Length: 311
Length: 263
Image (cartoon, rainbow over all chains, first blue to last red; front, top):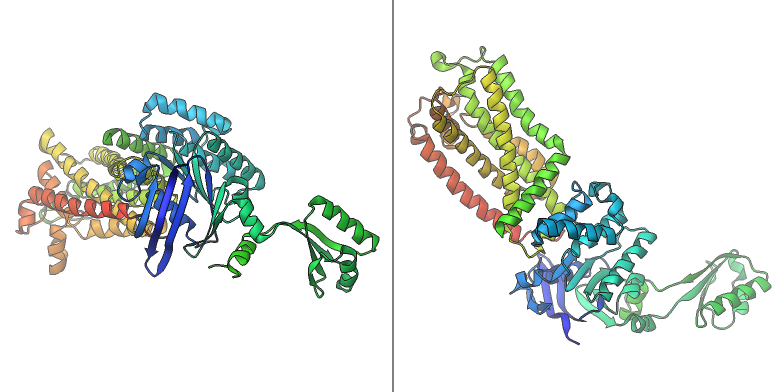
């Protein structure tokens, strides 16, 4: 499939700091790319170059068939950007924000108002439509921000840390909205610090560390490299560790005698959890903490680079 | 194209103004207070050379001071938009860059026009008069608005440069005080030390004030013979045009690279 977003050896430096050191990306039409990385890894810089806000210092980037440095205006006609801060005018109402964008995008007064009404409806903001956006909750503001991106249908949607600062319920709602855009055929590039978010939304993940691509693949491929979920057990009395290790069998690993911790890979999923719970209770051991753990971004970096944190 | 975009963005600015009447109040109350305090309460206390009335002298200065407030409103507006990410959104849209900046300056121009109208009305009520005709009267206000437009763009430049609302807020106070008192807006410049006198008489605030006094038939009270004092209208127009070209170009370039600085 043709790439809608493609970069070759993209470079960008700020005074005293090399933000991008040759980044290659390839995003086929209608797919979601997750850019995963810590703060300062180059995620935001990449998105800002792709959205024509920054000129690259080297390499090239094409978005929706146009070069970002040479034909920025053509690129802007085909993209939408939701930055890290919900960029809505807080003194204007939700409706006025959308109407303003509609007018700027040449829908005309009547067209802009009609489109604003549709979007408010679709994003569940009709009840709050005529309140200043400054009175919105974080989740509502994000939804309005996303609605602002869809006033005219973009070919590519850039989302910079879309769920930063959102509670779990708002995050779920936002993810559902993003999935719906993808079903409509929009190509999405999103940045995130959370492996789970990339796993939920992205078809492919590019892991960035210190301005370079550290790894690239489907969420499944990356997780296989990192290892799957595991069960973490903390005992009330650290002296019980040998007994617990015997009860859980030879698969138990990472035994920490002083903290009273053990972990168990979840090869059989929930069946392993049930078996472990039964075994511990039969042995009469008091458990302080018993939880399923997922690999974090730090674990991804540890597995992919062997370094604790790529800063 | 530029027109529809500018109209839409100016509409946004005006909506904001309606939602935060504090800004409107500040811009209109300040000159109102100045007119009442200086023109009404101090009119008899301040003795002008040649025995002319102070109220008639200072009204042009009040107009220039209203023009100076355009610096603060536009600087704060620009800094707020940069911080809130709105500038990023506008820059990622397929619209020109001119309308974003132009809308800000037009809205500030409108604000200062309101401020000038209010102070002129109050000044008239307490006895200030224009002694010439309607055309010179309008020409005077035109010059004041040109000065306000220059200051609005200077404010845009400052907002883009400092990108911090508290910083530009305190700067706008400085511009207001230095601008209005290092000029002939409120005092005849004869009392100033020599080197300041030269700066003060060529400052657009001074030339516009003097030009307005001439155009309105109000006392000029500047006995100097420098070119700027003798020909205030062409000097005011020329300096405003040159400074506007410089400031607009700089603001333009800064806006283009506004995203270059890492946050």
